[in-house]
Image (cartoon, rainbow, N blue to C red; front, side, top):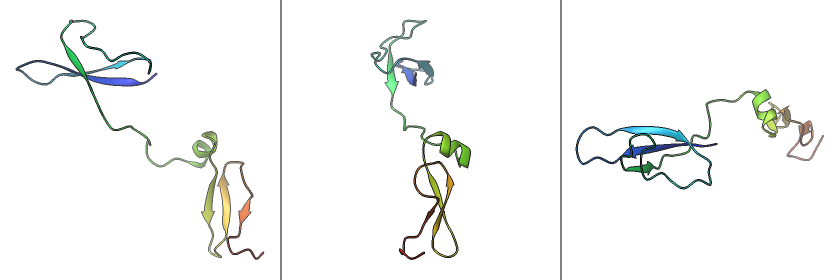
Length: 92
């Protein structure tokens, strides 16, 4: 369930934000659930990554990771999809 950020709409005073978890299908709030003050949803960029992911996290997410080796071939480092070694030059 996603977390949404809302801003309380006030003519004066400091800006006040709050977060609330809602189903993605739920309509946006128009009033604060506790105080009844008018609110608007704040559009924020998505949080896609949390920094570098290890091979276990990559494989667990269903991806395959290859690492380029010194001879120009690629070796699978994480995941089970695809071949263990890839030679983009076609020779073995």
